[in-house]
Image 1 (cartoon, rainbow, N blue to C red):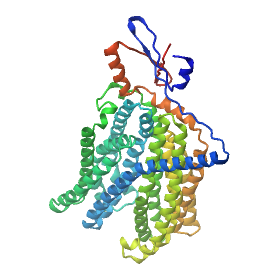
Image 2: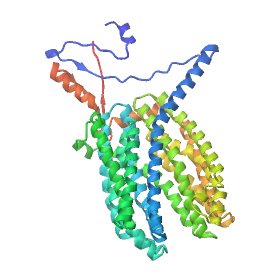
Image 3: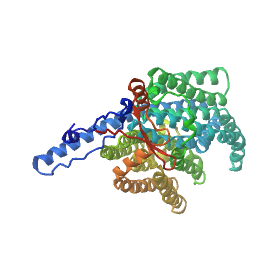
Image 4: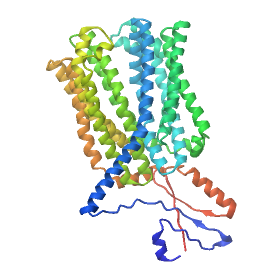
Length: 546
């Protein structure tokens, strides 16, 4: 083959006779080539139209990922509402104790597991883009093991420390007792969450989202009769509501396993077979999981601190009740930007893993634009329903008045929250959760918390002052996030992705099968070049010699 022919091909395939007719095979990854378009006349107009068309296509890809996740989020939100409904039917003590237990569990358990699981998202997203499918399996196994290990001290903490802590904080003894009972029967949920969080990310980073929605729908269909059985028929009371929630997650986990096994999704990642590799190479996962956990916890804990501060205001009963309604409202709205951020994270991670920095940049830009649009829609919704929303939860005029006054501020918070949540997705997709943790720490606790306390207690803004503090925090997040994303060197991030996905054990299933098949048929020699750096970076090269 001539030298001119070599330049025309993306990869060259030449063989030279070696001893025993063996062939050296090396793989060269296709690199993205940017061809500049002259910004003149019709060519410039055509380039603009082409760029807009690509952006619309990217928006479609992101929304196709986000939509099933929005539906899943709404279904899970409905499940929590069903649980609250049955707690309410048991009386005020059960409702107060269950609500207190759920808040305590969120702070000390669920936020930690959710945050740690986020550490696998950039690895799996980039590995899928790089076709390093074996790394997805190893990361899934490592994350499950990590969450199981962390669940043990959390379970012990719930069992022995919750009630004394609540009493120490001045909580009513009967409410603390009900909360202790609820959380004891919620402990098995830690085991289930240790499998559910990693499995959802494992599927999501492969753009497998709709089956998760269908599985969640099936689990919700069973959740209502199970609650009725435990609470109304068996008379288990608050224990029945906690057990029903565990059963809902158990059903969801069962349906997910059934789907994975029958669809064969797990086969392209090497199945679920355990190997000694999953006990090695934890450095990359932990370096991403810990800052991801910090980032999630800082945001979750803010709302729990807000509830505590409400108890110190002029009318604590009304403000705490109103805060409960507003947190439920913002949790409902949050489903949309969080789903968008998951979609953006998947797209950015896949493109960086595939060594396509230009497409990763487009995914990040389009995602941020979608985040701003979503923020405006959320602001419009919160403002439009401000006079009727609280009446769906209560008939108390004081609570309705407080909620109506603060809902526009909540909507304004979403103008910052939606794009900053999307920006966190960009940072996760590019394996930079530590940056997000620093931004959240500085924005929520360096700016938002002091402003909230100052306005609520010193400037006499009372309840509204707390929400103005959140408004300052959200907009500080956005102001820090946008320059960070705009200044990103996407080519450098693509190189980082190649290093991250080339970690220990990162060999594609297809590569292993191909090598094995060639050895059986023609005795081909496969060369793997391993560069030891930290934990070791394994790269496959495709080299063809003349």
